[in-house]
Amino acid sequence: MRIRWVAAATFAAGTLAVAACGSSSPASSAGSGASASSSSAATTPASTSNTVKTAKIGGATVLTNAKGFTLYSFAPDTMTKSNCNAACAKYWPPLKGPVTATGIMGKFGTITRSDGSSQETYNGHPLYTYIGDTAPGQAKGNGLTLSGGLWKEIVVSGSAAPAPASSSSSSSGGYGY
Image 1 (spheres, helix red, strand yellow):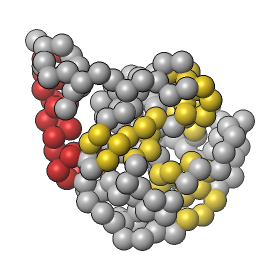
Image 2 (spheres, helix red, strand yellow):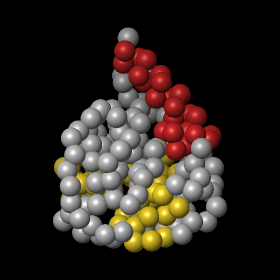
Image 3 (cartoon, helix red, strand yellow):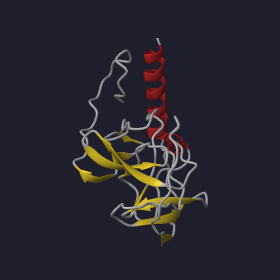
Image 4 (cartoon, one colour):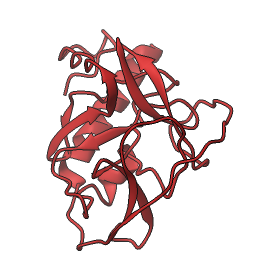
């Protein structure tokens, strides 16, 4: 019963996210430094800590927030603008910036979102978590096409994990949209 409810809720969330993602006004970009700290894991994808780290998920080393939740990029974004706002951002919460990171190759920075908040970027890609990831180490958002574009985990080494298989059955627990 619980699996059916989770699949139905995720399907509804994905459907709303597809229709609700709007555009934002241009934003500015600024670099941020990289240094270290650690944080304990929790069971919600939203980040309250400003630390980025890496984790091995599905054969690839990917960026995660301080709690171990996978970080994603959104194909329609630009280096200075997030195109995931309003309801879209409820399903794909932006990673607030600036962050600290140690030993991660690449360039971190921030942009200003349409609501005036700061969002972290990595190599020019605004970063997000996904509400479908319910525990650290998951990458259920990888390869999904929702909210008007493709979502990809941020791979820092190795090969990207294969995109999840689509499923139209709500009893399978899949996240096919």
